[in-house]
Image (tube, rainbow, N blue to C red; front, side, top):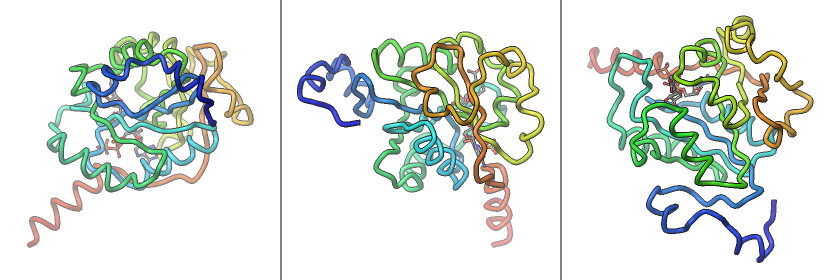
Length: 221
Ligand SMILES: Nc1ncnc2c1ncn2[C@@H]1O[C@H](COP(=O)(O)OP(=O)(O)OP(=O)(O)O)[C@@H](O)[C@H]1O
Ligand SMILES: O=C(O)c1ccc[n+]([C@@H]2O[C@H](COP(=O)([O-])O)[C@@H](O)[C@H]2O)c1
């Protein structure tokens, strides 16, 4: 969307705060996809989810929130700074911004991060983005119902999750709040809870697989 002078003046986010949080610019009325992940390492799957979400949900931008660590994963990820740099190198797109906001906010759980961001960005239409594998275990996330009330959720299909994700406990609990794919562009402004399952090019890539390959070639050399 294009903003007039008056609208830019009314950006409700305190600029000092925004710069302290190292947040990209977002104005009221803009639609921002929040894509949390370990990105250890980032890959084409992340990029595809972001590009499809930009297009189908008519987003103005996607912010990659590189997490200090997924609370449900045991293994320690690569150093945060290295993952942020790798994510920036992968996400070379004018509408994709890479942030380490959870490290700045010192939040560990998505519900806490999203509660702060929605408070700090009033009027901005935020959407939580995730892959189908995460929908399968969403009911195990801390305060997942609160997350579903904080902002709409878009789930992108992923090999291995196609037939199981939409039958998972959280999907079942929220089944009456699911939008048809044809209505994707309306998701960001829908009353919550609201969610959608998006189909598109399926990318059979994972960070686990890339780490295994990297370790194998390091061991061979
Ligand atoms: N190939 C893919 N297709 C769809 N969604 C994906 C894909 N890869 C990652 N995602 C989603 O991107 C987000 C961040 O994922 P993450 O950084 O953990 O990558 P990953 O490949 O799932 O890593 P790992 O194998 O270490 O679990 C998650 O919501 C995940 O579901
Ligand atoms: O808050 C939780 O309980 C929670 C549990 C599992 C995953 N998450 C978040 O989900 C996002 C995707 O995680 P990952 O490791 O699959 O990339 C990332 O932002 C994690 O912090 C959050």
